Image 1 (cartoon, rainbow, N blue to C red):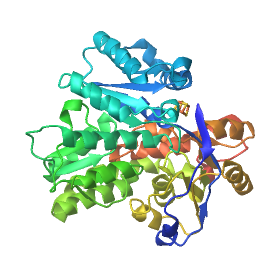
Image 2: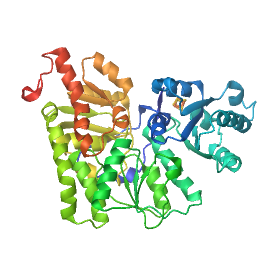
Image 3: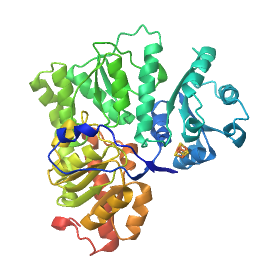
Length: 443
Ligand code: SF4
């Protein structure tokens, strides 16, 4: 299901700070997946966690259809479906929830962390899941830990589900008794295991120790946080997580996001500088992977160079993706839209966008479609709900949710990131022959 509602604007006074290009503020209808969607990648990452959505049949349908492959294995998510008598207030929801949790833990005693995920229905009837988590924790800890966060479609986009979950993890880690010394560096943002391993090796080679990833693969490996902890965002949509980390005393390292060779180098360099790594060592360690990234991207650049690309607001990854497309692939950015622009976290990215690219915040889908059609871009990056109608009209599209699911961060994934954009253009040339010849004879 897609959530469709009005989206309020935020931070009205901060526009001028970011860049000289055109900024369009939209407050109309938006069409994005809700925060439950993030369970699809979070459950793969944290392998001893179980996500229990407290929602309706619609919520159950969303997560079952979005993760259809899970029917072949023991899933690590489910929906506690609220029936009509629950919604009508005829049953005590907390009693009902306790009963469902008890049944679940009897069947799955291996669950170490149980995550109660709020939905639109649970929020509408004001079911307080944080209170439920506290109550269940008193009964179930230390064998099971219980957390809660909101994944509802009310005023969120799907990546905010991850943001809310990570913020809940940070708050929870403060409540846990720990003997472990605080991490010196926290990488905040869900990364594929393969990307985490690559960054882990680079940090080790750079001599940076006590690095923790948030979320960790195990609920028992959550980092301790202290006033000497520094953190860096690996994803651009983590405003609540950043605030939670800072509330615990961690200091943010400001950087571009690790997309493409330029972004990854800038991200690693900001960390290296913060930890006093000698420039010569940094250059020696990063030289070979940088060259691999450049050569992998060079293969796809002819497909993207000079292409007009329009990015609809969907995942909040749009600004770093637009920077990558413009700076490293030579594409022309018609418009980069984002459901919400965190100006402080995106300051470096915004400064590198071309001045002639429109930047939009929020959504008014009809007006954006009009602008997109008027510009007639070569490639439209948008949600699934818009992609099919655009394709039917002969436009080439890319689903933006793929950038949340696919490992795209770091040097070794830079070529894959370029390929994600190039592939629909290549497919279009193959299918339609002469309709959109590839620039520079790349076909
Ligand atoms: S949380 Fe809301 S938007 Fe998401 S599936 Fe449930 S009802 Fe739909």
